[in-house]
Image 1 (cartoon, one colour):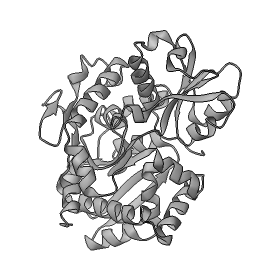
Image 2: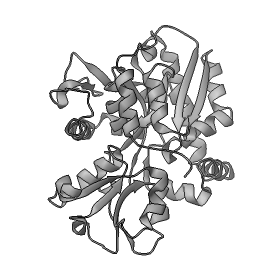
Image 3: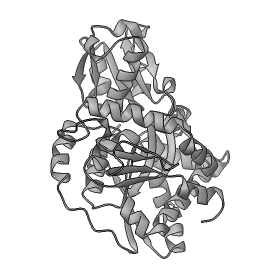
Image 4: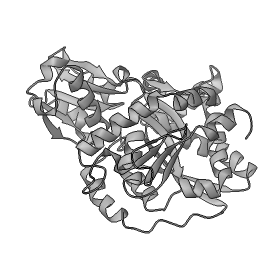
Length: 357
């Protein structure tokens, strides 16, 4: 894969220090909007929608312009959003909390697109049971969703990170590193997972399907921008579900869309469809609303914020995991109600479900 996806690198933490005190663009009624996205199976629809006129269709409907920009570096897309250069960005629930929200940018999850349902995996070499990971070096992107998956995997067999030795490894190096003698355990995501599992001795011993609903992929927007410009939110969900209808169709047009998204992500139609099979995609707004409104979301975000606090990723000197407030769709708040910086809402997706766009 030619790009970085789903990671929180040390460089991002360094730049976050500056971003936390940088001025964020003042939100106001406006007509021009910028959306950032990066390559990952759950976010490929944004590039396709821009290329095929779906973005233009919905922007025209609301009399606005929407510029959709692909980033090859996922962390940079989030940094640019946090700095105020973009109005919305594709990211995971964990990274939304640890980068823009921890950086002081009030952020709202407008679209819950999917959750990883096998795309992320713990892989051992010449071992077939997770318990065999004890005492081994484990190569992964430190502080990423892979790190979170490792923590959840270890907990499932009564171990902690003290029982292994984490080795920070960049995602472009994963496939090559696994083929060296010293690498015996690895945690990564697709398409690297698929490539590594074709290598001799590689076995997946734990994957994200075992923690369903915890690694969530979404499109989030600046809360103030969204409040002052609700048509922007409506256009985003209109774009998304129009694209979902095409991508998931069992038609020649649907096959062509999946082939185009596969090619754009460095694979082909079959490879893209294999990744989709390991993704719990919410292809309809009703499905997305049901997932977002379910009580399990609060439990998931509690696990995520606890992990981030334990790793020191909720801000320097954060006294507890409560330092940042997280508002759930029912209005309840995890953490500090006076410092809400991450919000989950089903309102825009509900408009799509109701045909009210």
